[in-house]
Length: 486
Image (cartoon, rainbow, N blue to C red; front, side, top):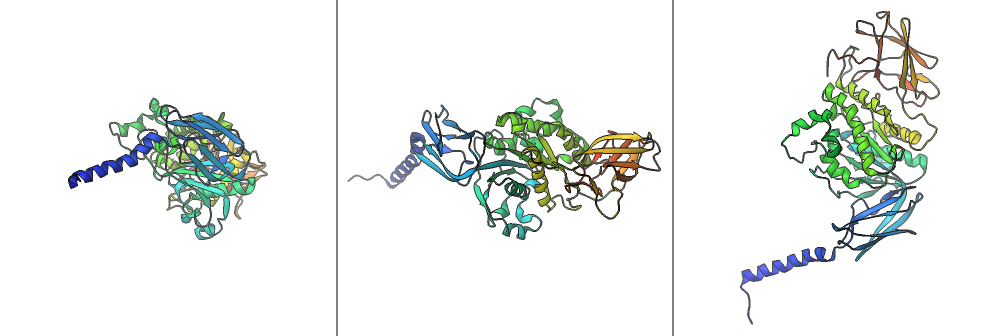
């Protein structure tokens, strides 16, 4: 009997092993689903259901869930997509894929699905939030499902991501986004349907990383954003489009109701970068809406968190900071249709950029969603300045989103945080009172007022709310260059 030398036998064995491992995948091309289609998932109710994955080129792929079925052939690159008819809320169902192989996805619910994205305050898990132990112990919500996208910065758009769906329970909720969880918990309680939450966020990241390259590269206003990355082909988390490529593109097309966003800290490094945000956020919103292709803006509502109070309390109303300008930029984006903003000027912490109170953040985001996306009879946001009227030496401010009435919290009935300026453009702290659901502002130092500011600072003292307990948003009527900052 002839035997090969030992070295040849080893190499021959390795070759056979490689053949066994590699050849079947290439030859048989088993059908696969994108990662987001997995056990415990939630599909968006009332809308067409896209399902996609890969298979051998030309392979026939059938998709079914209940009585809804569809089929297609994989294209030359092995990609396939089937769109099933809309479904009502309910479940559990099974999603079945039939090709040369059969895939079964179990425990599929149909309800409301929201994408949550941003930086560290969206990523911050329940276990780090206020009353974490109590919140985790109470998280018995089997019809709330959570999917966390694994962090991935990529130079080119990716077809898939990593992550998994989990059923909300005391054991699983601790690692999930606190803001998203508290948002979803309120939706689940008030809508009475399953809720799916997809968290795609990463701490310390800039908005330009979350927006596609296509819509940014030709925009001259973003030259300062691209300049630091010239000739640096790095898969850095803050390079423009890298997080869109790795963490958003793989989700594009998955049926969702809309998105919630908590970001902006990274883009508040200077007044100029904070001002640029009023252009960058609309760019991201329109980019995502177009790519998802769900129809008009009302079919992809987008809500965000206005930055909370932070840093030391300042007493000079003339000082303009990048943090205050960022809040102003965020508020200006409300001009876009189907948008909303959760005001959090009262839940921050002076010494911690990651405030632990994510309960109010989630609650207020849900308030916006319930009013704007689900048409519930609620006041969507905190009071927003609508108009300012100068009446001799006084200024009268009118607000939207008042509810039943404006409320001044605390024993003192004076409204804190207002300042007036005259033709000299010097602001002085002012006396402000609620009168006939407006705020009347005056200052002995300013007999001829031409501009008013409210809470326009990093960490202002505020006590003006609406009847739903949501604080008024900071504002200013001037656009004067800052005397100091950021």
